[in-house]
Length: 328
Ligand SMILES: [Zn+2]
Ligand SMILES: [Zn+2]
Image 1 (cartoon, rainbow, N blue to C red):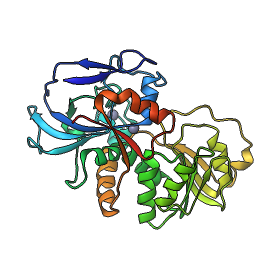
Image 2: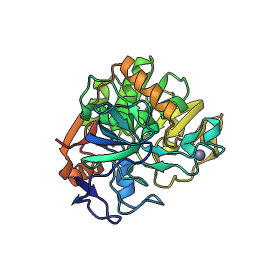
Image 3: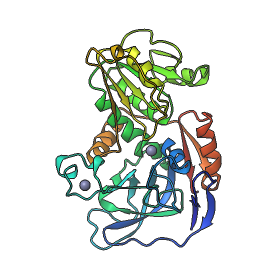
Image 4: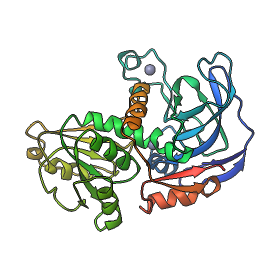
């Protein structure tokens, strides 16, 4: 099968012929239809995250069909449509796992990082971490649900119930979260790279009340802020935009250093917090909610072999919505 392989950090992925993997006990062999390209993939490729396995097949927004079933798997049949997310394995017995916080498991394994992922024709996954997906949208349209959607949803929950929501960085996650937040009756204030009028237009088309550059102050006091851009300087910026009791949620796995800031912008019970990974419960809730809210993704498809082009386009801010690799 074809796979786009990361051999060492800060080098392009290499189109490689690998043997088709076989499902072990509890695993599914999945024929990949589409795999989303996530900012986390850039962090993996750039060597910004510790403990990556090398070589590794990146990709953790996988949609495909079950092609073969390992021993001991319950509840899946050949041909079933499944989604494979970032969270690929947890121990089930550590203090985090037994308290409903498997996203923080000390022994967790992650798809496309410490487990081979979906930049390939086939992948294997632990069936307990695979999701069932609705039948309507295409594989490419669904792929961004598996991380941008899921982790965006978790970030939205951590932001609390506030009505006026700032979103900083309007890419794949933001364009899904904005639809969910609008469905919940919230107002969206979208901050893009300064001068990105296309991105601001995109945000308004998805129902944002206001869209502007991240160098502009919020037009009104916000209740919460979601940071999807990996830019530490946005943390004090967002703290200045939220009112008393407001929460600033950092949703990415990696961020540049946060500049020092005066305590007064945190005072008033404002909070800064991160969101790490996902739980399977997040996935079940999000997939249900996304269907209720009729979430539609905007995707820019690339052939699997053009993964490096997709990654460059994401890095340069040239993607409106989500980049997705397709195997067809
Ligand atoms: Zn655990
Ligand atoms: Zn991701």
